[in-house]
Length: 420
Image 1: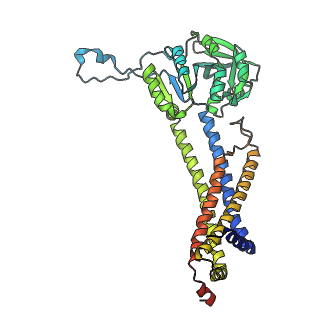
Image 2 (image 1 turned 180 degrees about the horizontal axis):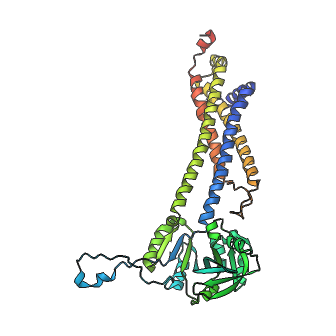
Image 3 (image 1 turned 90 degrees about the vertical axis):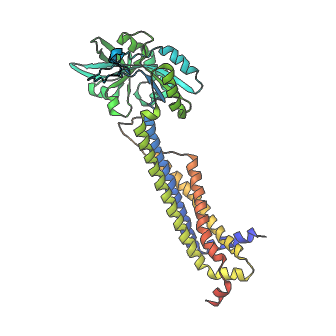
C-alpha cells in the first residue's frame, strides 16, 4: 500500500533542497498561465466590445417591405405570347408601399410569441437637415424610445440627454453626434428638418446619439414614432420596420423564415445582416485562442525540461531510495508529486498575476471619439478562463512530470551505485 505521507515528505524535501530549480519551474508555470489569463481576458474583452458595437444595434430579426421587380411581368399575362421567347429591357420595380401592411396585428402576434423578448415599431423617413443655406441629407427614425432602450441598449450610445428626455418632449430629437458637430448645435437648440415634399418642421434637440460608426452618426437621428408620423403626414398605424429581439438568438434564422412566409414580408435575420462581421469576429477569436494555447504549450515544454534535468540530478537519490526498499512505482509517485506541486503552486500564482494584470489593464483610460461610452480598456473576467488556466497548469505538469518520472521508475540502482 502506498504511503502517501512518506512520498509527499520526500517530494517536499527534494523541492526545498533544489530551491533554484523549483523556483525556476514554478515561474515557468506562473508566467505561462499569467500571460494566458492576461491575453485571453484582454483580447476577448476587445472582441466582445466590437461585437456589441455592431450587434447591439442590429435586431435579431428585421421585418420590412423590400422594393423588388415583379415575379410575373405584364408580358407574361398575354396568353397568345405563352411559350414565346420574350426579351424585355430596363424592367422597373413594381409600385409598392414601404408601409408594412397590418403592422399593428403583426406586433401583437410577435409579443405573444414565447421566444420573443420584444418587438419595436419604427418609421424611417428620408429628410434634409437645414443649416442656414446648407441642406444635409439624412434619415429620421421614429421609435418607441423606451422599448428601444429596453431591447437594444440605445441608452449606451446617448452621449448627452436620455431616452426619458425624448419620450417627454413631443417635438424632440436625438441628433446624430456627427450632425451636431457639423452644424455646431447643442442640447436645447432647435434644428429645422425638411421632408422630401418640402415641408419644414422645427425640432428641439434633447440629446446626442453616437453609435461609434461615423457613416451613421453623420446622417441618422431619432424622434418619437408619433412625431415622425406627423412630419411625414402618415396615419398612426404607418410603420415601415419592425425590429424583433429574441430570448434565444439561435432561433433567429428559422423564425425569420417562418415570419416571411406567414406575413408575406421581408424578414432578415441577424446572421444574414452581419455575415461579414461574424466572419471577422470568428477569425479574431481564433487568433486569440491560438496564441493563448501556444503560450500554454511553451510553458509546458519549459516545465518538462526542468523536471527532466531535476531527475538526472537526483540519480543517486533514486538509487538510494530503491536500495532501501522503495519500488519503481513509489519513485515515480515521488517525482510526479513534485511536478503536481510545482504545477499547483505555479498555476495559482499565475492566476493571481493574470488577474492583477487584467485588473490593471481594465483601469487604463481608453479615450476615443468613436466610442464615447467606453472609458477604460475592456477586459473579460470570466471564471472559465481561470478554470482553463489552472486545469492546463495541472495537466501540463502532470504530462511533463510523467515522462521523466517513468524513466526514473525503470532505473537500475545497482548500475548507478557502481557508477556505470
